[in-house]
Length: 344
Image (cartoon, rainbow, N blue to C red; front, side):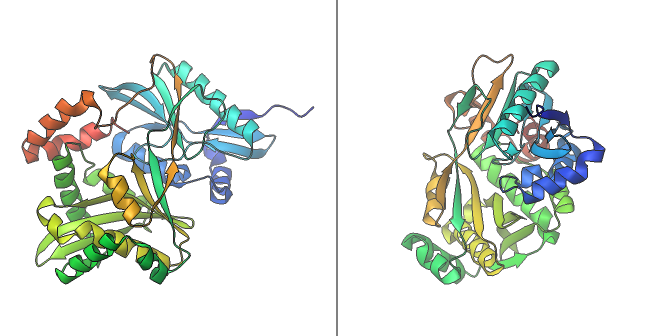
């Protein structure tokens, strides 16, 4: 009989084999890139506690985990803070289950409330799960012309409207401060804390291949989108526009330019990020060609009795959202980056 798999914490001597496995495994995402661990730790202090499954000297699977503590929501282990998915990447079900079991043991030893592992498919070894969200993906291999034809008619009209409005498209991470300011304003409108310059500066520093698209009208910034290319996929985790310019349809233009330019650069897929089916953002992404893919958030409950539900649209958060919208913007901009670190 073969020896059982051994699960170990990621150590410095294992980093090269982790990175090699992550580069080759199809399920490994930006969350498995060790640069993301640097972004999270340097921005918010969440300690990476990544796990690796070994079959002898051969890597059989990896699982990024972060200890999130110090906030009002308690202590937890999270596989991919601030990203849509990126949990278990394993060669087979045996390795996936070994990582799941080790993550439970780690959660118990740390005394956290729960552990949450995010992925785009269910993994063995977890007792609890929820499937409230989808990501949406678009096949870019058909080329810009067919992608344009595949947009909903209203999306094409809105792109053309934005172009006629004279919105100027600029690309470059040198505009990051402008994006941070627009994103703060947009998230304030939505009643949600926003990342600040420290976080986005870390993203730009660790991922210089990231692309920032910004729209400007005359001398005013209108909106922006920060893209993270990874392997053959372009991920779109952050997009924001100012409400007073919504009639110019800036988001339609940003989405189309991101799709078009990603296809022209030879990427195979575009990932629109997380949405719920009952949200307007879900329908907006579908209009731009996104195909829904279910997300599986799986849990080990340690101290918690039920699966956590931290969606801002949930009834118990409505009062907090309303209060946040009414707070003065300078206060929101100061407090937001501190709070969002506790909502990974």
